[in-house]
Length: 358
Image (tube, rainbow, N blue to C red; front, side):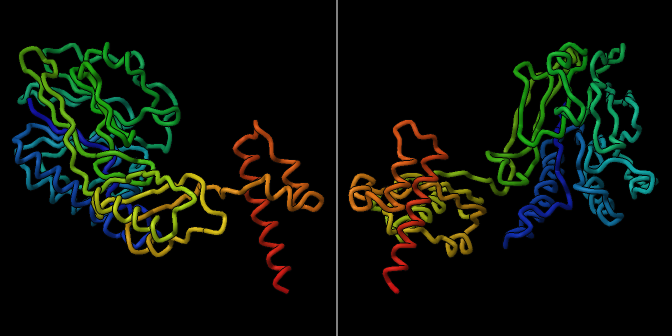
């Protein structure tokens, strides 16, 4: 039995909605899910498991029709899915009464339910969200049905507010495989008994690393997973980078270095830069043009001005600058105290320069 396992597609989401590339990211979510469906056909799998949050919010009828069309292109693949906390089942949802194509089984009940597929030699146990949160440990003590079939568990959760999951308990539950959702980064059990595939596309700047789907195979004889592989598919990654500077670094040099780093890793990716090191006190970095021209979601300037505090104190022994240095400069200063010293001195020197110009 060959399968593809995915979750947390979030169809209809528009990541980074205040950025120029936001619409492209929304389309990438749909395109990558379409690729997963195509991969199900290409790899000749038996099942496509979707462990919740196929949709980012309550789907409209047109969303259901679009996704149903994709499922209709793989009539030989059993598509089995549940609702997660984002696309949870509501009484007025377009999900209610929607007519899916024959190869689709949506496990809709809120109660744990087992659906048999006797002609294929397996069953699937799962349930859909009907509320935004599930704090009780519903899976604790759950055991696979006592039948001579391959048993699959389909569940959406993994944190305190969304179905807390005991990983060790899953391994002892008797299910051949637990196809999980909700956690957006991939995680595969060493014994191949459970996995989170992560979201196929990263959805915000915290979701770094590659994203994709899981492909696996279960032996009909041993009823155990014989192979489990994470397959990268995402069109873009969020990449955090740290750029170190010195007092010799100019704004143009820093801009050029950041552009080179982007080109080296791919302009299709989305970048988050941190600038660290000691800079010339006379230089401040304005990188807004770079952020506009490239897919840069955030630039955090953690650099500090390289002041000669001994010289400054000698020049200002009895005024506010000298008092400020004497109050805050110490060997065991905390990061917050250091920043207060740097920013305070910078502000005082600027104020002095403005007065001198009058």
